[in-house]
Image (cartoon, rainbow, N blue to C red; front, side, top):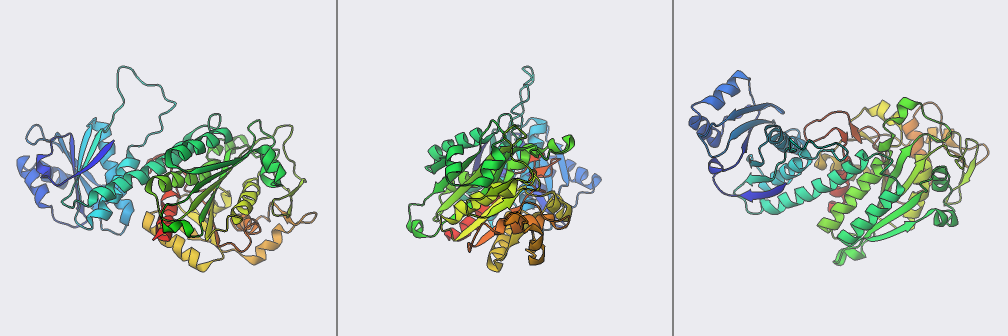
Amino acid sequence: MQLSTSAADALQFNGGLLVLTRATGAAPSDLERAIDERLSGALSATASRLFFAGKPRQAVSVDTLGRLPFARVLLLGLGDGSNGPVALRDVAALAVTDALSQRHRSVGLVLPTGDSQTIALHLATGASLGVYRFDTYKSKDPDVPSPLVDTLTLFTGDSTAAQAAEKGVALARAVNLSRQLVNEPPNDCNPARLEALAHELGEKHGLKVTVLDFEELKRRGMGGIVAVGQGSRELPKLIHLEYTPKGAGAQKAPLVFVGKGLTFDSGGLSLKPAKSMEDMYIDMAGAAAVFGLMSAVGELGPDVPVHGLIGAAENMPGGAAFRPSDILKMANGKTVEVLNTDAEGRLVLADVLHYGTMLKPQTMINLATLTGACMVGLGNYYAGLFTAHEDLAVQLQAAAEQSGELIWRLPLDKKLAESIKGQRGDLKNLGGPYGGAITAALFLQNFVGDTRWAHLDIAGPALSDKDDGHIRSGGTGFGVLTLWSLVERAAA
């Protein structure tokens, strides 16, 4: 989909679908009235019949039947402004979804009043997220071509909005990359696939790529990631993408982002029930978010060094699989007693986090679909935030609010740390029956030293079971926009 901006009169748009918005309780705009007049009152009559009041997700559409240069007009509710960027993204996504359903290949979208750069950014992001479909594995009907939106025109009188819209498209491209990775099946998306993608992004965006293979992981004493991945024919890898700016920011301490990349999690020898395995292709959503972020970083070029680290592995019950009761020696020297091989993500992350501390970051953040307990506590829409650094918690919550993603801080309860103290080793990889998301975060804290660190448990929002505005069913790409907001603030 090609996106452009235009200062022309939207009434003269020569295309398929023209989209207008109206805020809750607002009067129709001059443009809406002019269109309604050309249609002999059909738009206002339809809006009245459907009790349209400008509320979010409300929609009214009318075919113009040749009375206007465009074929169809769509009026969408913008809400009362309380939902910020999400409302704008949803409007744009609903616009392109309508165009796809009605097979209009060109869309014009009239910007609502306000800061045109911010509005153009979020509309461009939402439209580009809205056209995403995961249909890679579906057969195509040769007699019925797939619907496409070729062009989207944002009508605005502000010439600076074009640059903001281009940035929005770049950010959506990064989120869609993350979505695509999460949606890919584990027979194709495995550690080797992630390594190949890293090299592809490296060539495309000038990122330095380093990959530690199985033998190198063993040589470096990374007993966690080695143990988790050794039961699979797809051996584990640590993937390191590095971005260095060309400006003065190259001298800054880097931001380091760590993603859990379990491309499939069977539970290992502590085998999951069959039903619980169905969605375990998403257990690399943390890694997918880091890949998406590094794509955006490479394309948009912030003036701060950024590193993306991926612990890529497949947890399988093969003959070489690690066992409950094993004691693993981790890269930082601590030993871990394995109680359950299905508590594997923290073992992978532990070694990658220790590797990250050696990069001397100003901030290190990891993302992981780590615990079902976090979903029990927070539901499907919120990620759990854990950090001992108050200023970082404030910054992350502000970044999430700016991005329109939802995070909720949970405590690093020191009393619960007693439940992960080992009997035969320093630590156990599983705590007691309560506070599972917290004990998992406390486990990770043992491997970050004095680094300014936060953990995001994204088990809930990483996957959606339905289309919801700019969110598509399947992988959501959660985290990319929040992390980008954090990077942008650090660069500034």
